[in-house]
Length: 158
Image (cartoon, rainbow, N blue to C red; front, side):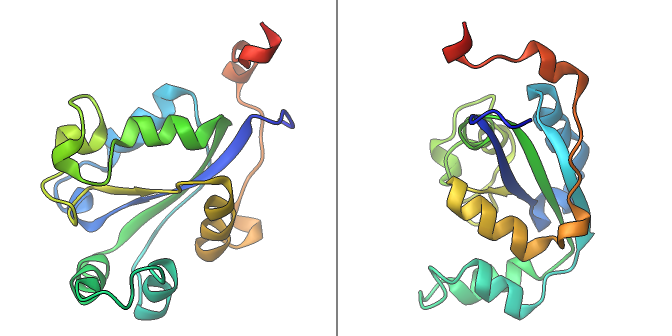
């Protein structure tokens, strides 16, 4: 899977999704898109990892609320890989502001607010690399060829 359009991304299934029993539905949406799950685990986030992950907003007045929310229950962290994965995932997930998310997206169908927006997804290749490294050890990421990959072609090849 060395094609230049093959990308990896991190997805965090947040406490609200876990509490509302949406984990299977969320994972299914990414699998049906054809993304390969290359890492998957449940973990209880602690202060340091939350502060590192949200370092871009940790000085904002609303950060303590986000920190409480993200540490309130375990989360599911998932590394996925696929053709143009970052853009594909952003479409599946919908905008951060759940009230702007279209029906059919995860946030449009399930999110209740901007904070309780069900999932986090990497927004760029650079953030995906950093985020996967933050949540997974190298030996927790698995490379394998999915059977359906043979049927996925980039537009440049067609």
